[in-house]
Length: 499
Image (cartoon, rainbow, N blue to C red; front, side):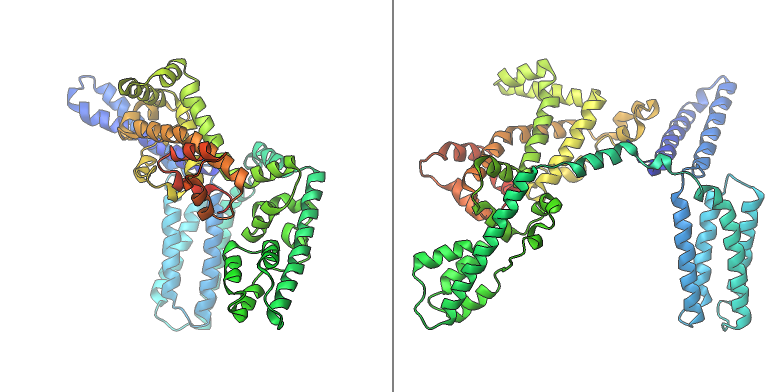
């Protein structure tokens, strides 16, 4: 769906393409015309198209022009105040009205009504006055003339814009989008009992953290020997802080009490769960943006198995979203075409793979629905993966510059579709297919990475990297091997919750 405010740009560009085609046709075949009536007909068509494009700027739905003028008038009033205070000269105001005169001339070029002519004349008169007095002293007489002129210009402009300002905006209410927003806003991932359990667990965690902080502080400030390693380690784990701060505490607890105490002072202390999770109805939203220190504590809490899995899925939704986008990408690119699906599933030779990719590129070129879906899904993947995946998107700067943006604009316009080949760079379809297939082939590694996170819940990206690189044989060995099948697995780590 094209935004209503963007329709003016679309209409103008569509007409420009039509002008271009007619002009090129006339120039290329002018000497070949034997039927001058046909040439005249094309010329009239060209003139009509040009006129339509000029009038498009005056379309009734150009309400944003009103905002532009309001902003301009506000700016002029501020300039006038600066003139009165002697901080700016009339030369500055003259420049602003030159700009307004130019803008109005462009907008009214195909409309010569009396009201618009009156407005332009009043502007010309005022600009001439400013030009004569731009270096003169600001006297009471000059200010009276400025105020009088501004009142006339504003009055004329208000009359012209009245119809636009009073226009109904019902077509801009987007009822379907508003309904979707309401559904999303009202959707509850956790039920009431689960929210109560989460908040109660946080309350317990905050209480234990305060007590642990107090015990450690008393030991550091007192003259007693340092707490035994096992006991202080228990308190360290109850603190709400980052692994980095905990390591700093461990390092200095016995050897440098002053530094350890200073580090301890930076640790969060609070008994108020509303400061962490907000009101009851805000719990889900607060969990999404929760501070990493509290996030780490969340992973340590003991929840019922079902709720624990649900929380981890909630915190890991960025990876889940990426996997879902890739699943849809595979569905429309491979699974929905029987021939491609068979070749992709059974084909092993490079020749078959190459032919399969060619068929995919052909589908991309010929099927508008598939083309739009692929481009949107790829952009979703890009927004999720981010710049850290630069090797995969190394051609991105010019890739989406070549995407058929006209398909989003034209919605089936025969004129724009007819010159599609001129607007596409030759390698865009194959490049989009290549990137899509790389993501699809990475999916199993991403699933293993997500599952490994759920099992071990590492607190940092570095911890996750160490776990994956571990060469020991255990129940997670197959997951590690699957992850390492993706050559660029490290570039996906930042998607996981520790970030």
